[in-house]
Image (cartoon, rainbow, N blue to C red; front, side, top):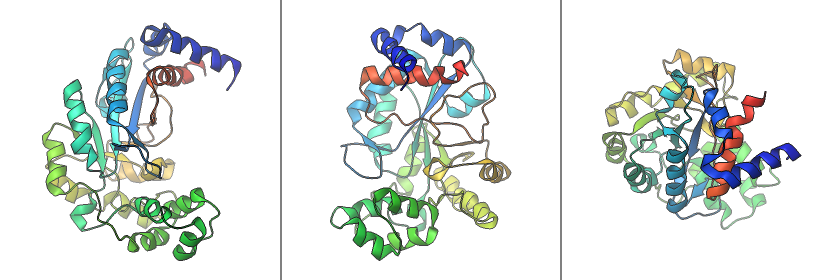
Length: 304
């Protein structure tokens, strides 16, 4: 981190919500879309998880800093003079309904949940969940050998899952534990609670490596079933593993989605491509670091 970066972060921490730097970001119409995965007791693994208490505190701070709005609205309508945030959640975790929705209701805000709809097709845990499970009792070398890949560490294994559907399928075939995923009724309850639902692809395969025909299938397959099961219009899309580019963005646009979201941790600014919209995952930051990081990210493009 540069000396200037450390100084700005220090100011943001010391002045908290009332930092004058916020006004610069707001005047330029900047906003921030946050992404979360699993909310609950934190545990090691490929799936980012934070506690309910930490999440509730972060939501409260967002409300103090600005307004929490739908991500589609944040992208469509610039708002000079106001900082806006959007809350998004990826994957089919039951904690979305059991832990997240009660907090959102208590705080009077809504979230957007990007679901795969795996249980609608009788699919088991996500491949990266299976990887976590395997690594609890086996070495990286043993897991790599069984999956038929070369890997020296966990990151290599995860990359193989992301980029090769065959590896992901082999991992899924080894699952010997029940999936802790939303069922049909629970997905419908999310929608009934006033939450927006988007699509995250059925198989959660990284899209960048797919040939054109498979890419088109991935952004379509399972979308209609999710819409029918929940009674929702599913017109927002989140790229698996947060990875999208101009080619995948074109496929998503042609499929009729109104916006698509990546894992690039930047701000939403005037001119942001709605089909490559950035999102930031804060993780288990405490109050001061959370506010400091938000201010830094909102201002990042202001200095460009």
